[in-house]
Image (cartoon, rainbow, N blue to C red; front, side, top):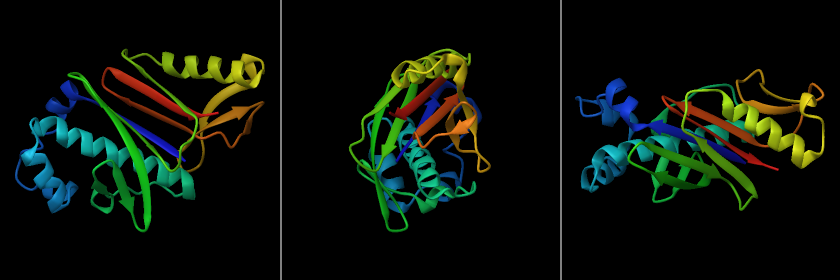
Length: 180
């Protein structure tokens, strides 16, 4: 199972004052808060941990076909692992000066991920081309749609497949992760 999340650091700085009283306590455990304050760059650590939690939320929601319900404190970050209930997910994060991007997964799957640095929906079109090529189907047969729980999926000839897919966008950045 896979999930992903991207945070545009410039936009996050405008949208959220994570240093205001009570914000960190609502989102992060005491251990995670200590990790933030001890980090060389606390701002990047806030958004790294946030994106780890979000990516795992998406993977967990997909894994169990859950309806949308997100409580960040339910997701516990321990190094690169994130736990929810009795389930643990591995994460890998990429941090640049402009964004933080995290992929969450349950096993060593053969996923492909790509980050786009524009505000367009070009990432969905690129993903459709990629799927059509790999599955050797006509591009017009491939679509990306959300199910009743808001989980994105791949449709071939208007039928949902079991291909794990996660989409993320924030500000100037978009990304996909797919396991084919």
